[in-house]
Structures are given as structure tokens and as C-alpha cells.
Image 1 (cartoon, rainbow, N blue to C red):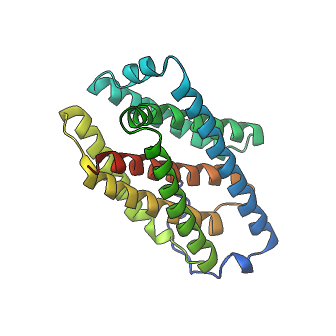
Image 2: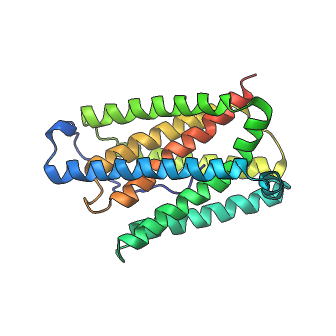
Length: 241
């Protein structure tokens, strides 16, 4: 769940270009590296999350993280701070090692913030709900990514909408924690739409905005969007009944 780690690279919309088959070699190589790093980040997330869910202390960890309204609010605040730091590291000019540290730190933070939700999902509905959520997320993400890469449509115009949507969603989540009300399936559906829009924006940014040496930071932005979608697909499936 990452509402804060967005790469607002270019506030000005650019004309749409042709799809990936007409790209120059440098941009095509950048995209390959970006999606390789995205795949590695997802694999690392799955490994860490699997280890957490199979560990003997997962129950205690989840109870500590979600021990109360303000405990969870503190967890979210720490997550946002770590995510911001990870994003800065991934963009750093200090060297590739620092950038990898940022990406790895962000994957770890995501795995920890996911732990309570996935633990509750497996406890109440079994592993089937996670498989279904993963398939839905992969299918939707793949379709949206393919559309942008093939069509070459530039979605930089979504920036302002995403800024407003992210702020509104963050405030709503904080209010739900403080005042104790449930957000429900409708909010989860809206968050899935927000995540899909973020993925369109991030894919467009990878095609047009990032420098060709910034594939680590670009992969972090894509990873954040996909993880946000996966989180709320799980929430949606858990609340559909």
C-alpha cells in the first residue's frame, strides 16, 4: 500500500508518440532494464512475504502492528517516511548500489505493511484469495501496461488528478483510523481505479520522462502502483460478501 511514493516527474503533458516498436535503442534498453528490476522486486516481495507468513512470530507481529487505532496510524506514518527515503535513494546520483538499497528498502517496507492484511486473508479465507487477487492484479496490470507500450499514449495529464486523488485517499484512511469507521468495498474499488491510473501514469513516465539511467527509480514507481492495486484487490475480495 503506497500512497506517497509517486514520481511526479513532469507537470507538462507531452504529445503522444508511437508505441514501443518505434523507440530508439537507448529507450528500449531502459524499458527492458526497468521491467527486469520490477520483476525482481516482485519476486523479492513474494519471498519476504512468504517467509513472514510462515514464521512463528507472524501473529505477534501482526498484533503489534495493528494493536490499536493509533498504533496502526504510527505504523502508516513510519511506512510513509521509509517509503519517501527509499524513493530518494532510488533516485540518488551517488551510485547504483545506493539506488538498489532504496529499492530493496521499499520492497521490505511493502512486505511489512502487507503482513497484517495477508495474514488475516489467509486466516479467514485461505490462500485461494491471494492467488485470485494476484491473478487479477497481474491481468489488469499487464493489460494496462501493454496498452500504453503499444499505443504510445502519453498519460502525463493524469498527474493533477492523481495528486488530488492520493491526498483525498490518504486523508480518508487517516480519518477512518482516528474515528474508527470502516471504509468498505466501495472505497476499495475506488482505490483500485486510483492504482490503475497511477500505473498508466508511471508506464507513460517510463516511456517519455525518466532518463535512461534511472531504471531503478522507474521500477520502484511501477512496483508501488502494482502493490497498491494488489492490496486493494485483496481488500475488495475480502469484503465482497
